[in-house]
Length: 125
Image (cartoon, rainbow, N blue to C red; front, side, top):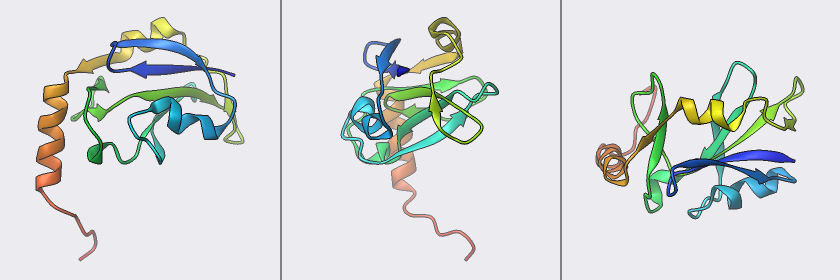
């Protein structure tokens, strides 16, 4: 099935094929073993990213308007139906490109170091 990859090294959005949820981590790359979905657009297109990107080599990142910090590493974009199943994205590559704000490797490293220097957070105590 058609999906998009937010490629931070080449700073472009590219069409790829994803056949199963098992393909998402390898497609994100960079040592991704666990992924999360921090962004879902109003049309249910969903961005999947490396949940543990802070602990991998930083190669760059991206943001959407209104974000206060970058998302580190690549993302995979797929659509989502009413049952939560993956579908082809409804957005075009051009629409996704117009949303993305590229963040340099250096700025991502600065963010990563700032977050990691704060140490673990325990909520509710």
